[in-house]
Length: 251
Image (cartoon, rainbow, N blue to C red; front, side, top):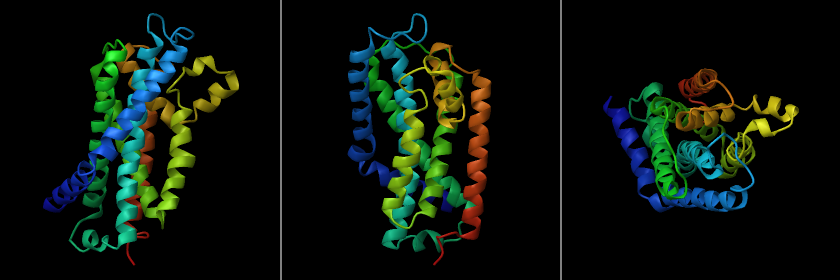
């Protein structure tokens, strides 16, 4: 497994070298979201009993940051390697497709967790949070980051240029994230939009993650975790099949 360790370390070093861009920038963005939305909505909206809106907002912002940055890490790494031509140096060593998959996805998980921890730490002074179920928090964080890291790997393999990866981010990941209940509870929506929200796998990740903090959620956390696991398994199966065939990686 020395090849896997080397690839994993290379991917972690890649985002650590530009931590201002890959970690500090999304943390600052989430802090601005919290300051603006909590200022506007704090006296107008209370989602759960005895939970201020600012506190309700923090877990959603943490999960949103983890999802977006996990996707960005693996997708940007693959497309940059393809465009610069250094993908050959990853393909030449005797790495199995499992090692290739785990190296990229686990590095994406690390970046997601680092950014999520940073967002949580900088937002704590603005909201009083309690942790009701630490196990659920960790479980949803790991599986959600793994899912988005896998989707980023798929997007990077499908794309031929960086514009196409940006299209995945802007027209798929971003809308699904913003429409998943980060800033609201789906019970505040009309019934039709509640039904549509239940088709969004990102909703289950954020709702289950929020349950770990407040012990309250819109959906049973077991259901949310099952949906997230199914989505991860399906995307991992697609990614591994593409890697095994060398889809758009072997020229």
